[in-house]
Amino acid sequence: MKISTILDHIDSGHMALPEFQRGYVWNRDQVRGLFGSLYRRHPVGGLLVWATESQTATHRGDGSLVPGVVKLLLDGQQRMTSLYGVLRGKPPKFFDGNARAFSGLRFHLETETFAFYQKQKMDGDAQWIDVTELMQRGSAGLGDFVTRLGQDPAFADRLGEHVGRSVRVRGWLMNRRSKGKLHFAQLRDGTGICQCVVEGLFEPRSYHQTMCYESALTWAKTEGTICAPETSHAVAAAIDEAIKAREEGKEKVILFNYSGHGLMDLTGYDAFLSGQLTDYELPEEELQRFTKDLENLPPAEQRKSGKW
Image (cartoon, rainbow, N blue to C red; front, top):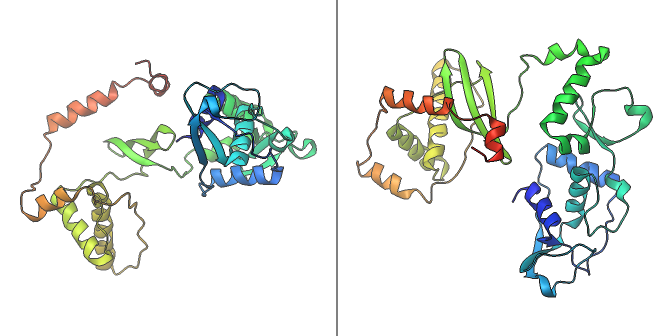
């Protein structure tokens, strides 16, 4: 479940805090540590909820619960209250504690660190971002922030340092199309879909399915795990790179994404081992037709709205 969904459930009365739970006791160091861990994709623990009928649920605060089954938060309320307070800019309905613990959180663009507002330290430094303001305003707030940087003489000249800069994109590749050295990659992560155009950074590579299954069997025999058919493409590419390094007499560290196991895809392995699986070349006209369909997709903001 997404964090945004949980926050919406708190607002709508689908999730609440049971009356026997303690109040909010976290301090600013703990809140800052939580956001630092989330930013770096470190584990932050799960939530424990109790699903029960709203009619018999005794909960904190004066907010009303929806009819039917609701979820009472048994473990994780310190984290969820902190997230709610920073992202919404106010405490949740069940709040009982010191709201200053999550008020005024900032993020520094260059050092990539979180800190709470300090006038002497942050005033005059345009690289400090108000996290609450940014999350509430979304892409519009990000645009205003970039504009402010561009208007600040201290940073205007430095904006050029970020042009052509290599960045780390977390997610997985959903679709791609290429023209010469220009590659259009459609990426997806846990929060939605992002698109980027990368020049010379991505090298699209395709393999026939029989070669992928051969690579998957090699992997299973040497590493002892059965990978998913989708993962076997990455395995095939990694084996190719290993063979190339061996032929060149080089020692390399090869990193690839092992995206899943193949325990639900054993019928594919059976078809390959029994000789029923064959390679198939998609006709060029079909490729062109599919590419044309992608070009006709509406803009990202319109797709996000669901009105298309």
